[in-house]
Image 1 (tube, rainbow, N blue to C red):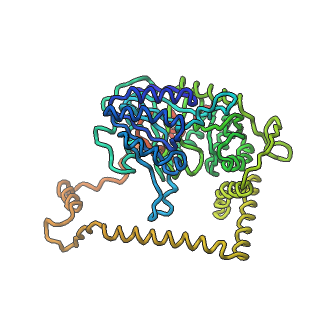
Image 2: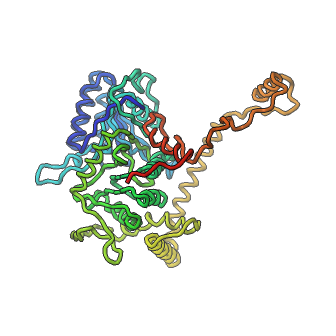
Image 3: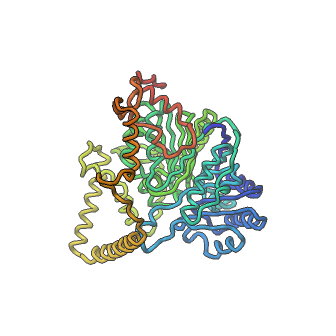
Amino acid sequence: MQGNAVRLLRDAAENYPAWLAAVRSARRSVHLENYILHEDAVGERFATPFLEKAKDGVPARVVYDWFGSLGKASASFWQRLREGGVEVRCYNRPRLDQPLGWIGRDHRKCLVVDGHVAFVTGLCVGAMWEGGPAPGPPGWRDTGVEVRGPAVAEVARAFADTWAATGAPLPPDGVAATGLGAAGELDLRVVASTPGTAGLYRLDPLVASLARRTLWLTDAYFAGTSSYVQAHRAASGDGVDVRLLVPGPGSDVPLMRAVSRAGYRALLEGGIRVFEWNGSMLHAKTAVADARWARVGSTNLNLASWMGNRELDVVVENAGFGRDMEEMFLDDLHNSTEIVLHRWARVRPAQDVRRPRTRAAGGSAKRAAAGALRIGNALGSVLAARRVHGPAERWLMAQGGLLLVALAAGGFLWPRLLAWPLAGFGLWLGLALLARAARRRVAAPPTRPRFSGSAPPGQEPARRGRRRADQADSPGRAAPPRDRRSPGAQPAGPISDAAVDSSSSRSAAPFRRAVSRRRGGAPPARAR
């Protein structure tokens, strides 16, 4: 979508003031959708203007995720907002009739004010993003954008979709502002992913195949699949400078750091440079390719974000914005440590920095869980015999084999240890399926009547009547071919606009033109 203005916002110091200023200036509506809202000083700072706007008659609406905000804010906090006139909804509470329904989460972070300005970001609402006064811990590293122009309507529709998933939908006049004019010159695409759509999972490998010079990724909870890693290894093999920046010792989830580290070897052996952030938690989710294509939003590089969550990202194709993203990435590298394959192919920091280990409770369980998560892709490809595996994946397969043998031994020695939990979960799942089947049987719509060939004239299906009418109009004309393309048209290839589940812009046009050149002629020369 053309005609947009985008402002890059770094960390809470730039994001929170811009959000609060927009909320205080609201005249028509304020819509906030966020994975986590903490009941702390920052949360109270946001609650106050929302209550003020609701008191002034401005519709103020908030959607938070049940799992994300669990234990972060009390019931009295939400009740106070509701009593003050703020419409508050919770996404995907646990339900007895859906044992596995809790897996899909609303991981989006966006704010839409008056339908004229939108913020899409990786920041939640909490004091840890701001940090404490010196010498306290610094704030978390994160990135967001402010969007103005026609693309704001797409962000507003994404919020409206989540709002409808949690209850009654918004009124038609409360979804998005109409007649938004151009606010800038940037092409922008809004990618609003929902569970099962995997829009970013298809987009990123496409960008990796089209990148010519650089592809720099920043992610908070990296756990790439085999196909995702192979796509970026292939780009590196073609001469693209592929880099990945992930959290270091400051990670807020040590389990995910272990999961990420288990996959370093495959990346490093493929020529991808890996860096660990030395500061507090690195929570940004960004990408920039060739200093022209850039992505900012909430999607992490793991299956939970790609397949199971509601996510929201913006994709910008602009040389100026791309340069700003590259400069920000390079600035982050100044506070990072590069990871390399050291002697005997051991994964070590480039400077051989040795940090003191902090033994956390349940450390062995975390390592076992991290190994189990990382080896799933390798085991699946082994059982299907799809491809040849490298040394890194063979080691992961060995870990998987040992884990399965240990589980089997536990089952033989202590059968009840495995039988009772599996039986309880199976009973819960079975009862839930029976309950849902009973409800759908009662609410099943009436079946449509089926007509036989002996039906009276005039009562045949409409489709048959149209076909006969066409034949009567042109009895001597042959049926049109199935393929209606012109004789000179090229057949469609495996990559199309459907690779991205969003219809908000044409920001990937140069990338699609590159694909078209590959289909119709010689591949373009690669810039080194």
